[in-house]
Image: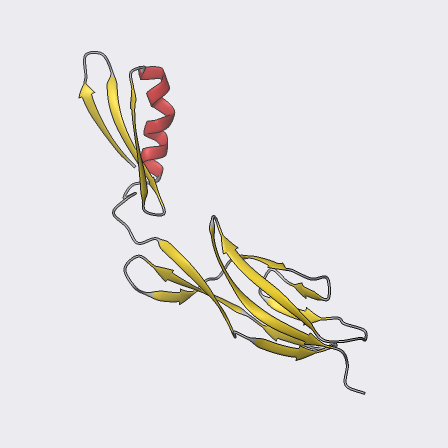
Length: 141
């Protein structure tokens, strides 16, 4: 976040806030309204000029497991400077109740019988998400 004073006599300030490569610009003319913004600006110094998450890939892709098995999935983040790294935290979801996913990315197949099911497992951070296809098969006879 960048704050620049356009007119110190009236207290008008120009505020640039960014998130995930998008920038919003606002002008505030009240000194009282500006106080929380200044606190936020100090706590998020460097906004707009730093490295930020641009995409997520989930591995392995695809994955196959048989009940009652599990597989460890990883969310790999790609950043604006081109680097990648395993994300230590992500919001994991499954498209089917046949597969549960822990907050650490451990996907567990609990299919009791019937045909195998194809499930989409998604890892998300803020508004950025990636997914993998997982085949959950019933137990081997």
